Amino acid sequence: MFILYLLTILCLCYIVLQDFKERQVYWFLFPLLLILLITIHSIKVHDKYILFLSIGFNFLLVSAILLILYLYTRLILKRRFVNYSLGLGDILFFYAFASGFPILTFSFLFVFSIIFSLLFYLIFKNNLFAQSIPLAGLMGIFLASTILLNLLLEKPLLHVY
Image (tube, rainbow, N blue to C red; front, top):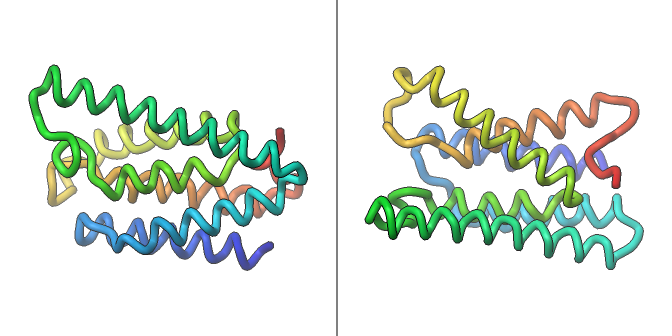
């Protein structure tokens, strides 16, 4: 189990480095992250029905958020959505992220990772070379930190229902 967590953290670190350095991430890292998180989630959950229910609900939540963002971008801002308002890597990261946690845990982690990303950007926006937010990278920092903190605690809390 420790190896899976370590591989997940390494994958997240690689996503972070690429997103900050090149502002694009290799596509295969997102399916790899998805597989690692689903594997960890399935080991922690004994009832596969609950596993599929939580992943399905999390995917619906992400899809609803993306639909709202898409409508806002297209109808109000009158801009293109993918790679202008939100990068394709960010969208893939959202779905990979959604696959790894129970519904409540994912909801809290997702909201707080967005808040973390916003605060980080507001504090360090003058030091970033691009005007866009490296969202997948910032969310990767948050998720890797959360997983690492969970490993250091004696009672893991990420997969508690």
